[in-house]
Length: 253
Image 1 (tube, one colour):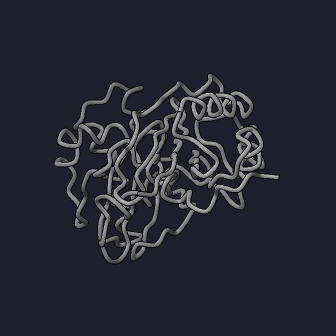
Image 2 (cartoon, rainbow, N blue to C red):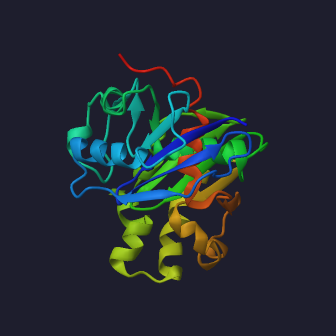
Image 3 (cartoon, rainbow, N blue to C red):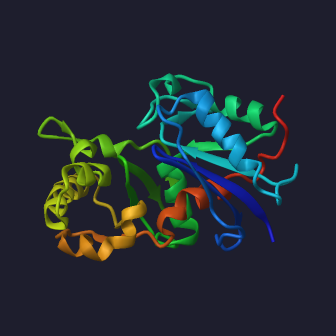
């Protein structure tokens, strides 16, 4: 059995678990701490180091994958969603590797979720284009084409009527505005219709914590494309980060 630790950094919480890479199942309890207020780099890195130290299973041979709410290119965070703007342009992968004393695999959080669903979940063996959407503090997206990730798709920031649509259609926006499921579904309807028109996917997969309540809002959507809840629910980021972590066990210099 091959295993790795996956760490999922979000705008409100940081969670981690040991993952069986053959099946995608969790081999440990899920450890979680709040994301430090303000989401400053040093504070987030310190929280991650503390979280990793809780794993008795961790040794030098255990791969570690980290996913983060930003466009990630060459280990650098090129944006910052619901965390400090100090992340923009930061050599984040090196920062984590130095603090952890080991090599890691570092990836966008929605991309990690998409990889997990394609490898273990609702998008497994689905041909053509699958669009993974994570409805959380914001809206994350991942494009999976014939099982391969097309990285750094930021379709949560799609503009509709001049509005960055994640600001009104994320689960965070639903909670802030105290929207009913029907009211929120109306906003989601416009969003998914636009994605359909532009990209003609074979499948939408909906993740994020609110996907546990998918029966309250997915049946309200009327789309040509099949839309299903994420099979892995809110663990998909952890699983995807872990799945991509193999080969990242060398200590950073």
